[in-house]
Length: 445
Ligand code: AMP
Ligand code: MG
Image (cartoon, rainbow, N blue to C red; front, side):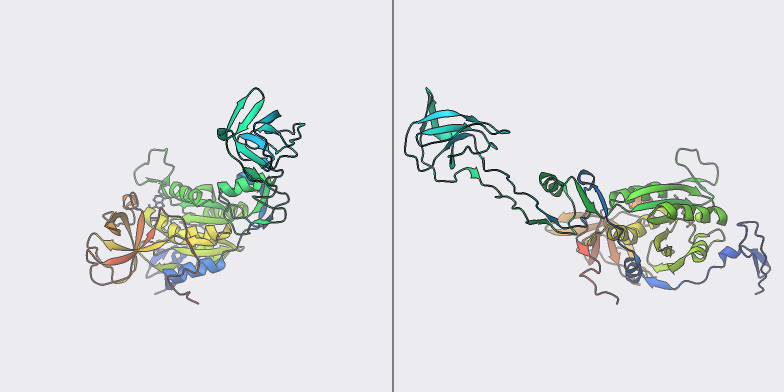
């Protein structure tokens, strides 16, 4: 084999053109052989390298599904004044007079000028402050009112149907821990105590770039040899679904200078970058060499099906996921590697979806070399999950993902997996319930 280095390349520009066995080859295809690593190791490398984003203070109402980065202590009591929990009459519980004279009414929202004394009562509504003198409320259902007199049909004990100051929350009490995922109830709790802003980990901003000379916008009619860009839209939707913010970088053609510029532009404004395509072994697969030049490639091949050429790099400390071009490969790699990483960056502790044992409904072919993420739809039968294959598992066939609610994790095996056997499955429609490292495998460290 002869090797000649030139600086002008008709394909990609300044790459270090070479001639191999008399054939001219673009120097960018001169990929070094990346070690094939197992997917557990790949996930470990990703999860070790990603950093939490710096917490930000934002409006409480905008913090839904973010992770709280502060502890929250109540600065006031709730309720802030003793108030009635029923509609009825404010009374002195030990008063034995019956009927009692009605001296006025206290509805919610202000303080009436009333003093309840023995032999009297005041009409009161739910949420209204208990008038001075009174120590209990008797429900309207147990009373009869006529001519300014109220007859009580039951006795009450002091404190009945009164919510005392601080009953729900006392000043100084810790009401939320750092690391809590902010849901509707946390938003309500915060604003009820007057916290209209809160410090939380922000949503990671994630740039998404499609690559390939054949890729065109979906709203254009593809010319012969072209195909519509589906990956960018799939990935942006997946990013959105995991609570991060997608930023489209459009489509980059297979030119080194153009792709390099887009990669740098994306990372200058975003926390992470996802590319798709351009990581296989072709001459125009330029992403790996670009990432090598601009940053550090941590792995370039993963022993999995689909998704083998998955590449992970860091540039200026920011993660770059170079996903394979085939639509299923890119989405499965997103699910297995990118989603947990983005969640971690956003402060999440639970970053892995649940895995459960399932029973195979079909006999599935084994792969002697690569473990497979086989797309299935699960049904529940007699308390067991039955896994039904979504059919042909080609990495180009997005239909194998449509209708899939789980990924079977099949180990490599040189014979078929028989119907009725048990396998593990990742539940795709279930929220993350496991930390990293997960409890189901020991850490590789
Ligand atoms: P590559 O990894 O660039 O060799 O691409 C592998 C396969 O995925 C090729 O058939 C591409 O045409 C296809 N592909 C790459 N990018 C996209 C995309 N954004 N949307 C749909 N298919 C794509
Ligand atoms: Mg390509």
